[in-house]
Length: 248
Image (cartoon, rainbow, N blue to C red):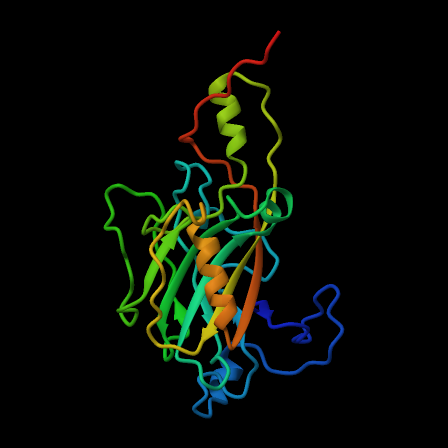
């Protein structure tokens, strides 16, 4: 059974650690869809899941930079229920919560997509990260009008790639650190406007464009649904220079 990310303190009776509320709904699978009453998945709370990973589990390698150049990898599928009353569109943000807790927002916010039409409740897998041979935008049918961007304002997906220091150390002849495992969240925001105009990326205002967008989405959201994952992915190459040698 798919595990589910939920709003606030709602629990789905899946025996998740720390989850103590009573079962409040059916999961997003066949049962919920069979009871559809025009509210997409029926009378369910706003929640998100993925067929590609369980809530809190590791992100499969193909959805990370594992074994590929830094920032390579494709997005996983995400499925969510209908948002609260008044929802006109959805936005999704990928955040590295480990980096956020340790070093602030500069590298923590990976990617955002917004202006997802309100009738759409699935983001199919396959949005690409760094791939010079691919078009800049690879949106599936039904997502016309949606926009996506990664942290530095590039129109691409940015998958988990937390253990890039391993590759840099190997290339630079330094002591190789162990892989680090970072925690991530995909947050789906239910928004009251169908077509949201966001400010252009300006590094002088905010070096991480997705951080700026997340503040906009969270500030206007009617509700949000969150699913958690983790990764220790190591890329094959990194675009960073070797650090200068230590002073004697």
